[in-house]
Picture (cartoon, rainbow, N blue to C red):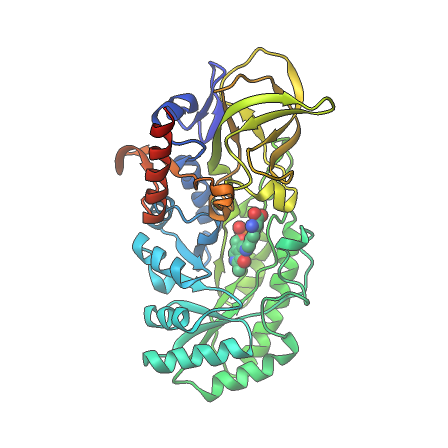
Length: 426
Ligand code: LLP
């Protein structure tokens, strides 16, 4: 079976690996475990949905920058969507074709822009000063920058305000009423700026494809205006944003094919190449944070499972009040209670789940937080000097090592520190 599932023996599996066996092999805890097959299936769902359209699937690296995951997606044919020069360095290391890569951001720095222009990356124009910096970078590098203009279609994605980005009051994108100014500036400097398309990104965790259709229709009108001014633009970048089933209650979430079908008419009407920028829907359900239970306790009113994972490893519940499903890794016949699952960090915001009906675990038992493949490892911190969790990706024929730790230097160093800490504690 694909991805995370309960086996016939009642244990939790990731692909064909029993998670308790993986726990025995991985020396650090907590750690992130990813299903390669699930990532492949998620990628293929986009690929199939896009059949018949000229397209670039740009995986949003911000969701998870584990180098093994990047290399895997690159091998499958993915492009990359980036928000920093460091991400561009990493994407190059993973082998992504820079010309199928987009650099986003409202505060791109001159060195990041120079690197992007040098590499032939598509750069999103976000503001007046950004356009000036892009032109300066192109002049320094001695070749024109390939640009997209980021426009806010002002369609409400109906998501948490922190992850809503395409409304008129957003910090991202140009002031739409100022579009003419941007077009004039670009036209004035053809040797520095080559306008290739437009971009919009509405927000994240979207569960309604009508939202994408409405935005694409608005973007088509902008493209017509821009083409009328003599620009031969090719790309409509509709951003990322598709949600996933975090609750595991069988909620109907649109699939990539539903999303693409909603915008297909708009793309075809103008003979465009579509760029999409999925992050969450590509990797979230491929990953879990695997923790170890430290103990259970009660304060009289409330019962707690205390684990070694925390808001430092996985901040989404604390930051957005986000729900991520929690399970024990092994069958457990003990009494089921309503528990808050918390970590060891020094504040009450440190919870992974609240009021979860779970069997009472013993110290040392495994517990997973599901759907942790996106925006979990990537947003982890070392608060309270918690060590940053590593990532394990079970083997495939192309990577014979059984458990490949993410080979980033930073993480390798932290991992070595973690091991030293463990051995000195024994
Ligand atoms: N493109 C742009 C321009 C973006 O800003 C984002 C995400 C994406 C694509 C990918 O969106 P996705 O397909 O993953 O929804 N930390 C938050 C999510 C922040 C999303 C930021 N931008 C969370 O944990 O829910």
